[in-house]
Structures are given as C-alpha cells and as structure tokens.
Length: 113
Image 1: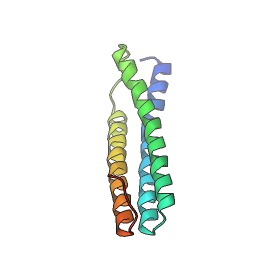
Image 2: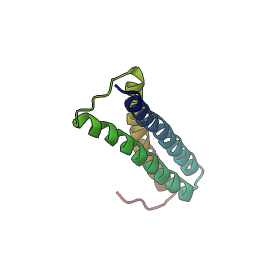
Image 3: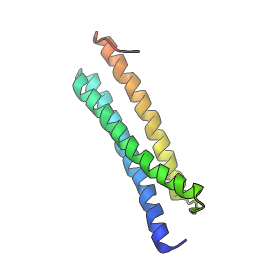
Image 4: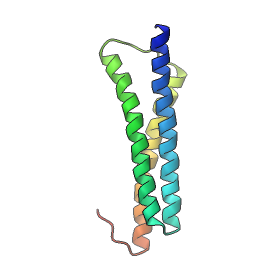
C-alpha cells in the first residue's frame, strides 16, 4: 500500500474513533441533562451525537467504497478498534435516546413513540 493510501486509511480510521468517541460523550451528556430535567439540552446533545455519528459514517463509507473499488486496506488492530468504537457509540446513542425519553415520561413530558 502506498504511503499516501496508508495516510488516507489512517485518517478514516481516526475519523471513526474520534467521531465515535464524541458521539458517545454527547450521548452521555444528554442522559445527564435529562437526569437534571434539562430536556432542551438533552435533545440538543442527542442531535450533536447524531452529527458525530454521521461524520463517522462518512469516514466508514469512504473505506467501504475504496474496498468495493478494489482498493483493499490492510486490516490492523487499529482498524478493528475503530469499527468496535463506532458500533459501541451507535449502541450508546440509541440507549441514550431511550433513557432521555424515560426521564421525560417520569417528568410528565409527552414523548412520541
């Protein structure tokens, strides 16, 4: 793999790790805000998490497109870690949304199903 390709692959991997971590942090902040009754912030943090997940998805799509076009990247422990990181972030975001809704219901706020 050429040095430029390795660098692009590393950028995509780091995009997954950074954006996945940011999404998970924003999701956790959403739960904390909902716990204190600050649902406006909770909703904003969930949207922020969604933004980071979209960015991560874009990095991942680039990697998948390269693979589909025959540009096979070497799978390293860092690559596997980045995929694990993003999957955990997605799961945590989904769970955070449910927890925020639960706090809203406990506070008497109507929640769409």
